[in-house]
Length: 176
Image (cartoon, rainbow, N blue to C red; front, top):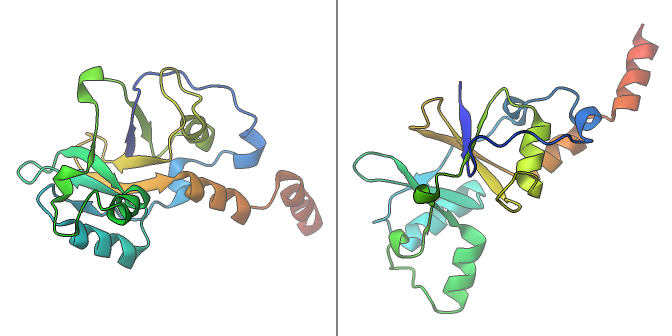
């Protein structure tokens, strides 16, 4: 079963008012798109083009040798760095990637079976010792392979697509 690998491992879930909003839905219900990973030696222009082609806002960075997850590249941040002249399209991704803080050993693992309330807590900063997060990385159960990325926007879109609990109850009542 796939998992989300995100900061802070053993944080207790916070009680959320989202129970009725998500009605038992899990991370799997978000249907995360496939991950797009790049290597530290890849050129910025290549990473940027790949992200634009797939309309991605974040790319994962993996080791060239072991494919271990090293960090990520925020495309909005990359665009700003390019505009400001801090980075050039011919630079290597490794020069500007944001590395994960492995020494702190703070991460939150969320399986595909984890309720969306827990994912929401992660995004809004409801987990101890970390602030709000913009995205979470989906990995395999052993946290060895990146499978996808989910964002706050993915969660918001899921809520928009799903009818409200009282509307669903009304529809169900009218069917029976």
